[in-house]
Image (tube, rainbow, N blue to C red):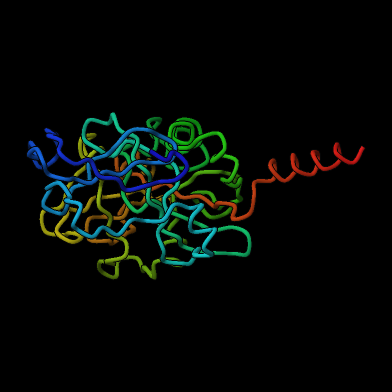
Length: 289
C-alpha cells in the first residue's frame, strides 16, 4: 500500500472480530470492509458507522482532509476540520488514530485549532491550584501530550504563542493550551450563564470514556453523549477552575483536583516551520559557495 498519504482502503474476503464500545463486531468472510490508514503508520483502523457496524465498501464515507492536504488545496477555512497528529481514541488505548481539529481562526500564515473531540480526562491541577501558569495540566500538554500526539516534524509547525493566563492580567508563552473564557466567547459566541450553546458541546472519545469521563444521558451530539471540558480561566474561589458542562454552558466553577475532559488547542504554522526555512536558506548558501 502507498505510505505517502492518509487513505481509506478495503480488505475483501476477510473475517474480523473486533471488541469495541458497541460490543463484539463480526464481519463475515467474503465481505469487503473499510479501513483507515494514517500516512505515518502501517496500522489499520476498522471504520464503523453510527450503529457500531463495520463500514462496507459500497457505503460513502466523508474523510476529513489532513492538514497537508487542506494546505495544498488552500482549504484552510474557519469552521473546517483537518487531521493532524495521532492519539489513542479507542477504549483500549492501543491505537494511534488521526486527531481531528476544528479551525477556529485563520490569520495570514497561521491558524488556531481545537480538537473536535475530548481527547483525555485529566485534573486541572493535582497541586490544588487554579492558575494556568502553574497547573499540572499545562505541564502535561506541553511535555507529555505534545510528544505522544505529534512527530518531531509535526511539532515544528506548532507555534510558541503568547496567551493570557488564568486571570487575564498577564501573558505567558505556550505551544499547547486550552481555551479561556474570553476565547469561547470570541470563537463560539458563548455567554456565561445564558443557557447551553450547542457549539460548545463535545463528544468524548472511547479512550476518554474509558478514562472515567462523565457522560450526559440527555444532552447529545447526533445521538452521542456529551461531557464536561476544561477552560484555563480561574473561578472566583480558591482551587476553582472554569468548565464547560454537558449542555455547552460555561462559567461553572469546579475543584481543579477533579478530572475533566481536555480539548487541546494551538496555533499552527501554515507556511513551512521556521527551522525548515532556515535549513533551506542554509542549503542554498552552501550551494552558492
